[in-house]
Length: 252
Image (cartoon, rainbow, N blue to C red):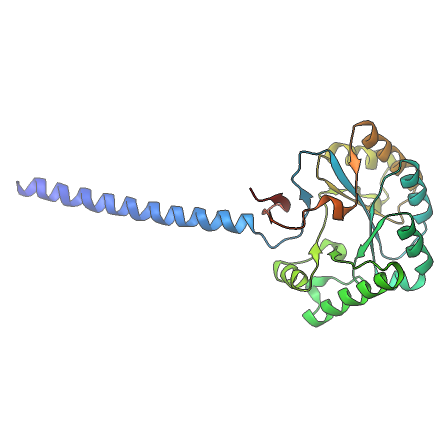
């Protein structure tokens, strides 16, 4: 073999080696990315399901002024919902909590004093969660194991902490924006257009004109074949993963 051919063969081998090395790194990166996305330590925003079922959720932090109207509408259409309540609110509204439970709805943890969980210590997080769960159990007998972070703010490390304490962290993928007191029809359109099977919808207990917009929304979902269920009846208990967008999916 001539010197020129030997040099060419050597260069080709170098190129092939570098290409192989690049492919190995690319494959390793893809595998790492795949598994990190499939096991993201973030809250559940939505559930992957073919069934037309969704969850209506109500955050109650400071005021109970609309609870009677909300319960009446839910009764009217025979649907169940999940109420995320703050412990300090429970202290002043034990009879209301008992009534929500009596109507067959789910009461879950929204902290005790409504702090930003990214700004408090691990010890304080434990206190916030356990204090409210204790209050819920004393009134309802229900062991609360679903938690919604105040303001929707929680980082990956704190999600892991909550999970280690036995809580599934749940947010939402549809925000009604009723907390902004926007126009009722905008609330209705926003919820209707953004909801799909597996959606978790965020409402609040003190929005204006809830008796109108909530009635219209529940009626719309009923007419379109949606089954409205409690969060615990929507999410999966085991054998699931949560992807990087917060969608909970059953493993196959």
